[in-house]
Image 1 (tube, rainbow, N blue to C red):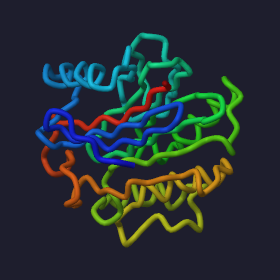
Image 2 (image 1 turned 60 degrees about the horizontal axis):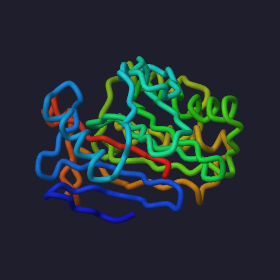
Image 3 (image 1 turned 30 degrees about the horizontal axis):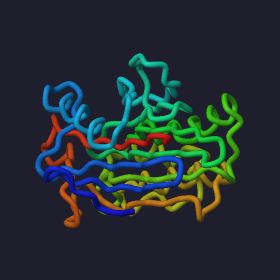
Length: 235
């Protein structure tokens, strides 16, 4: 992946032959919260800078609904498309953005996986929908895990910890350091069950709360109205 700076704004980009994956950063205070004027303007800027026809997203509610892009905005926390030059993306500021791409069939998805989505296996459900709706095959699926609050900083309460510890899929899985939860390790367990090849999984290994490599927004640091945007579009 490479760092790309446009008009003072930094993006982390993976340029595949048939698709492009983009993670925004907070450099230059680049906010993509779609409920703000600047957020809407910055989504338009992304369309212009990366020559994208349309950007699809969902009204995120910390659930596990997976939507198919149809030009409308639906309630959910994951969105899938097979349309060329139409980006799909999710907004985050500590939750986990996961980009999924079937490189053979050219099917793209973006997933917002907070602790509730992670607990309810939204990544698993998104892959299942890609398989049932489009015939996606796990050996052709590539995964990109974007910036989020990692287990170095993501402390959860006893009630949330107990829920994860009691969930069958996460048994015998290294998802806790004390009471610090690794949502990424939970997601990796979902991918293991889906038989996604390890070499097809890439993580940026960036913590929104404590990393010093990039400027990133973090809800827990008080940046409650700021959002990063993680997106993919098929060329």
